[in-house]
Image (cartoon, rainbow, N blue to C red; front, side):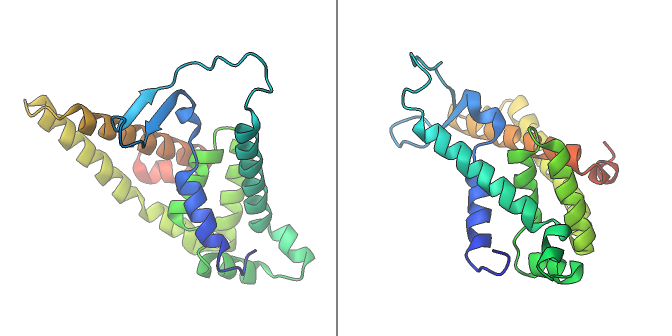
Length: 199
């Protein structure tokens, strides 16, 4: 997997598109006839646990498999069993872009809440195997601060009388929720970034 040219593409798209835990109460509409943005989901009216449960089970199984594969990839002990040195593993993961900074942030957002200790251990292992990742994570801090500043500026514009359309406001709120969730998940598992952000 670590040398596959297809796995990084799969992982990046999977992590980017995988639902975040907070989205279990929300539905992001994508049907052109629906209004774009966030809508609250109606409670399920299933009468028994087996009713149309298969898609949810399949999604959970895929999520679990991706989590386990990433943990195994980032564990030096696993690589050493196969004769791979820490340096080679770190370089392979980094140069192959298997877990880039955006993917790490998405990984934290998807898996950090339910698996905080394991995700923290994985991130620490990655940063030990490839110190450049640690530097790159910390270099994202100014971009994070800038993103919040842009969101604040937009909110102030709206507060001064330039009210947005419902669609734009809904999209903005959705982006703010996702960004805040991701940042919180990253801080929980990689606390070094909190000192860089001064939070």
